[in-house]
Image 1 (cartoon, rainbow, N blue to C red):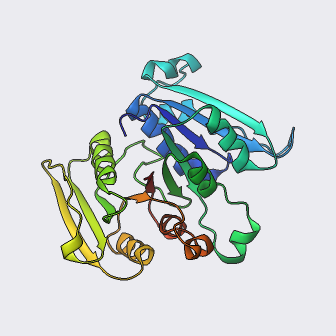
Image 2 (cartoon, rainbow, N blue to C red):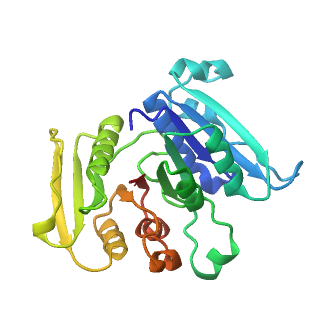
Length: 275
């Protein structure tokens, strides 16, 4: 996560997008990275168009910039901010086109978690972008503050859920979770490892040890997505970190991959890492 120097945040410029925006900006500050915010508008000159989320006022609120700071003062924090607006009918295609020309190390996207008829009648954006860009993606559900406070800019991880299996190799998820915990300065963290299978085929993992960090594992049987969602809710986790291989079967194509189903139901941010 420290190496994520190019962060991309698609925004619809609505209040529901603010938690994801806060996560994108906080991680940009921690990694001393470049943040690109992109909005796709279907028409030119919409009267109700709201401007991009404002960076400087939020940095002032967080105490990182002084009141009355100028635009150029943002770069003194070691970060760069870019704003891109495109006019297109297909939001996902426009953003994937931009990412093909300007690849990102990390996507931070807001997800509305629609299901049923609502899901069929609204254009999905977060999941198609994550699949198409094949990049590490942090999904932040609307209505969930997540591990970054919008009001204060503080970040904290207390419980992190990491689903593990023999394939794909979960070590990158372990590394990303611990790197992020160090990045935000969390000294007391419980990492919950969930394995769908048996104790005998629990994967061998390198688990970094730090003062205050604890590792626990849960062995379960059944549907992986159901177990991950249940464990996330029961343990009140701050973050889920998991590997993803996309669609592996006809059933996945119909109801979504495990990662997509978790994205649609999780009440905490999810960091998905493509295998």
